[in-house]
Picture 1: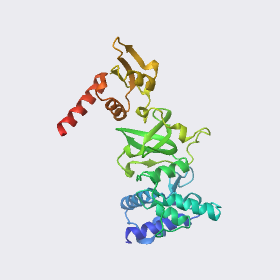
Picture 2: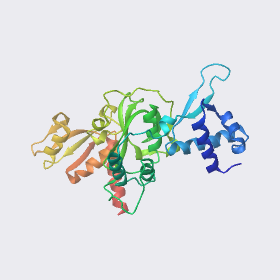
Picture 3: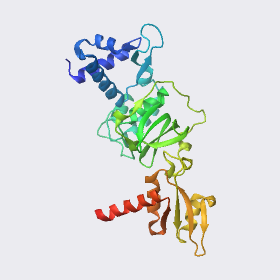
Picture 4: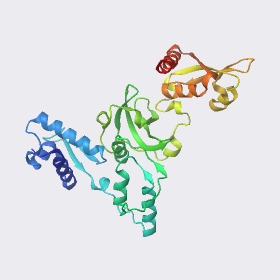
Amino acid sequence: MADRVERLTNLLALLLETVEPLSLIEIASELGSQYPDGERARRAAFERDKSALRAIGVPIETEILAGGPYSGQTRYRIDRRSYELADLELDADEMRALQVAVAATRTDSSVGQDAIWKLGGDFGADRAPISANLPHRPELPMIRAAVAARAPIEFSYRGDRRRLDPWGLLLRGGFWYVIGHDHQREQKRTFRVDRFEGGTGNVLVGDPDSFERPSSFDPRSAFPADPKQIGHASEDGIEALVEIDAVRAPAVERELGEERVQDRRDDGSITVLVPASNISAFRSWVLGLLDHAEVLEPPEVREHIVAWLAEVVAAT
């Protein structure tokens, strides 16, 4: 049996060259003895290879036959138009400007180097200074491919299994976020990619062309104004009553809005209703107020904050 690198290379070449999508049986036949003979072992090896290629950004497409003697069979191919870099039709000055921009961006991976090579540049001794650092996440190639193919993704997030139609990716504050339609909530939601649970093996990509991206969608304006609602929204049902000291009350009221104020006291302090479904973001918000805020209810949210603070004190 061929080693895995050779098998991955041959699989990539086969799926790029095929005119019609191929079934796993056809793939194994074309690649000779490179896959195990047993059906279960062959399927397991192929799924590992497929995940490895998708993890580096290879858009392997799937289709399921709807009729005929092979109804229900899954077939695979790679669309060259999605995989290969199209001619950008840039003039020499535009190409050089783009090469400099890519060279001045650090990605914590080989992506930047590969991009410069595809743009016709190279890494000489005379390199541009790093002006931006783009964090790399192993899930990004799969998500980008799903966005381009309009394919839904499934992933685990804060203990829940979520299904999302990904409309776009956005980098904010050093973190990648994916924005789209959440099937569980039937609303637009934003999720931080580094908080996906289980790694790339726990991210599933569905069939291409499964949804239409809203024509009005703009990722720059789709990011939640309130970070406590990333992955959640106030209508999800968890809100906390927080007492704010007089010294911070005006600023908090300006941030949350007058309608969030539940009570005003003679000393200038207020109690406000704050979205707390995203407990980590809520905790960060409360801690940012130092000793000028106290979580009053619900009991489970107050207990979470108290327990977290107790762990910090014990650790120090």
